[in-house]
Amino acid sequence: MEIANGVFYVGVNDHDIDLFEGQYIVPNGMAYNSYVIMDEKIAVMDSVDANFGDEWISNVEKVLGGRTPDYLIVQHMEPDHSANITTFMDKYPEAVVVGSMGAFNMMQNYFGTKFEGRNMVVKEGHTLSLGAKELTFVMAPNVHWPEVMFTYDAADKILFSADAFGKFGALDVEEDWDCEARRYYFGIVGKFGKNVQAVLKKAAKLDIQVICPLHGPILSENLDHYLDLYQTWSAYEVETPGVVIAYTSVYGHTKTAVQYLEQQLKDKGCPRVVVTDLARDDQAEAVEDAFRHGHLVLATTTYCGGVFPAMHDFIHHLLDHAYQKRTVAFVENGSWMPGATKGMRALMEKCADITFAENTVTIKGSLNDASRAQLDALAEEFAAQF
View (tube, rainbow, N blue to C red):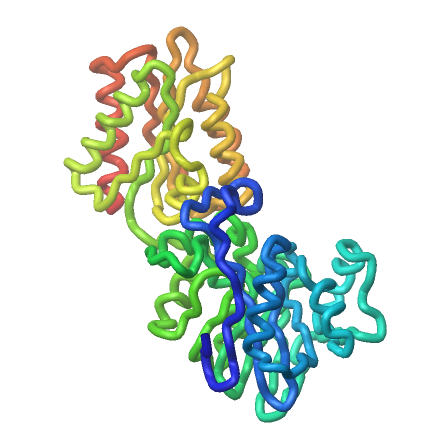
């Protein structure tokens, strides 16, 4: 596929993968994107996952049409993009590999070589002329690995954005960008909001008409939509007003309470209520929802005197991804000695800029008039904030 004059897509689709990075469910597979820029000299942008080396090389050869590439530009050393570097360098012995110093240090770790004599270390603002096209390198450390860089093609106004602006899903499947890009962002990049903000400021100085990420579709229309979402996500701002109720339930009593609270919130005019069963639903989806909305209810059974395991795991996912700037409420259940709220609050206090709801709900076994009144009060408190 030709993206612009002399700029081609040569990536691959992976429908064999079940878990991306060993943890994220990807029902529609993954795309590993790679690009070729043809000019007086030729640059190939990144490689692909180890399982698709032959397909990738074949794609590259078709575009080259018998010509020989001069450069392999490595923007990100995660193995789904770097695994075939040595394959490429062996096939094209005159080629030079281009990357940050951090990338070459990682090549030493992965491949036992920095390709001495065949490497070009670049820093912020360095350029590489291919002829009519000149590439400028933009360092993007910790978006989401420390060696990452972006590449800007001024002639075609293309930003090659490494893993930024990527999403789950192969390119031969139609699906909503926002949802899977959001789940991808908060699962993989979300902890590094400050770093994303820094590189967005650099990108704002460039005339960008096309964004070419290493995962997901090439973005060439309505770019403000994608840039605005990244601004919102990386600043940890609320994207969609609403309440997420994340719960666990052993015998159904806590679930009944959650269903009651959900209905009360809707009846009182809450614009959006999302309910997720942490023991059964995809936790990455739950994390995505928690970051998307401004209010979160954590409802769980007391277990071994503390927090139920699935809830404990979920809160740690939030902590690991720098959850912040949200309002959080607690619902606990315990037949004889409810203690989950104490444990949940102690964990959530580690998050930055969290506001705790005034109303906390305690259930002893099943719902009664007293615990319903507590749920009513919590629903009133939250509904008044919209």
